[in-house]
Length: 265
Image (cartoon, rainbow, N blue to C red):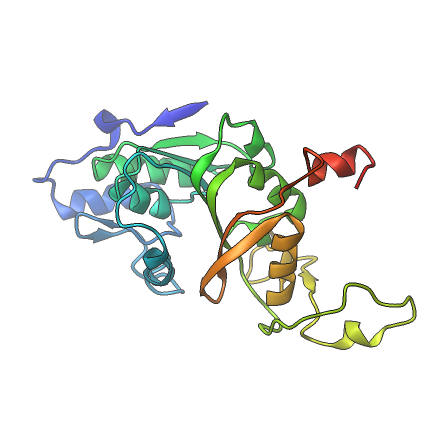
């Protein structure tokens, strides 16, 4: 079910004391997005610095300064940073989805505090294709490596991309990308010892104290998976982020995961 920010519950007037705002921010739990809410930061001591603004500064030049009439889907919206930035650029509709109630409550609070009309909905990425219609901009930032079934999720995400997909994932291993052959003989094994060969690292227990860090790809694996889903990469504004547009996302009129389910891939 969709929900917009309830200004009567969350909004603060310009005369609200910073101390009161800080208290409300603290009551909403630990924040992962460091937002600036009328001069009060939500995560000023973030271990990644001013996150995710440090990434946004490199990504934002690739997005038009004015988005009048545009629609935006923010998958794994967390505290709402990207949803807020796109709404500030004039997007007509912004929908943020997440599975964590804490993040959704933070995002609703932040949007209402800033006086921005943004929709937030509790929804898994695995059901994202059930959302009606497509979007001009789809953000899929910082979610991929938290998924047990990452490629399955990406195959569903592409069904919502009407314009551009902004994709970001943690990268580990080699960041080099170079050409590889379309096929190799069965007894060819040496390529799997090459650190540049596309690879995903499986985390059985925890990485960075987080049990949801499941699959962490190297750079070549990211680009290979994006291509395999029928996406065309048009920009790589920072080391972990790619901007893509739909290429051949369908084959014989069906999406790739549909073909696989029907034994036709």
